[in-house]
Length: 124
Length: 237
Image (cartoon, rainbow over all chains, first blue to last red; front, side, top):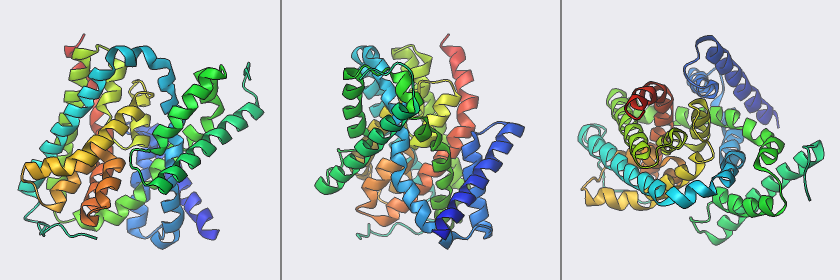
């Protein structure tokens, strides 16, 4: 319970700082500044990783429910889907494969041997 | 049940209904172990007919459940923790890694935006589709910031997630890409959390790299998209 409060406070503090930075210099959305600050505080040991572990995992596991109100907005778009649904799916399909190929080829060329991770795929 | 104005009670009922439907579909997915039963998708497919039959306008639903939308921000901050956990994995080659992911972001935004403008001619949709490779909370927030249509983004994100997660590994094998780092990074940056979950089941190393890629790509996208969209828009007016 103590750790849940600790995690909530840590995340709220980072989000608050993020909002302040967003207000001061704009640029990134406040929550992304918050995320970077949170990561930094963890790395510097100012927020104790072991104390946020459990509540944080829980939050990430359940955050899907927050996407629903935005996603239900598709209710206003039946016309768009009827007219352009195939084009939309096609665009997503093509660009996803292109991005996979692009990153895959570059990472294989520039990162694979150096990081020594070209081990045969280990199964867990 | 016709909702005329939004009362606290209606708001409570709709929010609870959303939570219950979502939790129910999470439970169904765990029980049947079918990856296609994505809880977000199942909830939306059941909620939309309900809203249509009970004559609840979307705007009322959206306002009634604004608590959930507000939680997107702290949820995004919470992603800082997995990023922290993966930092030591990427320390060694961080410059190359950032460069490759940033190039990927530029390529995917440019292609998705341009293709959508050419085929559909609607900027709000083009912005939503160019954010389809980003993890959902960031995708929705960025779409709204760029004045895109944030109701399209979650669907685009789900389709991109399954495309890369299910076909990505075999496609990369076909291209003779075998290292865990290359497979992880490319699936993570193209298919975010959904891709990451799918490949983590087979290979934890790839899963770890994919979670690094999805978070860093999201941050890079936030930096890059406000610079690129205005430039691209010049060509499509």
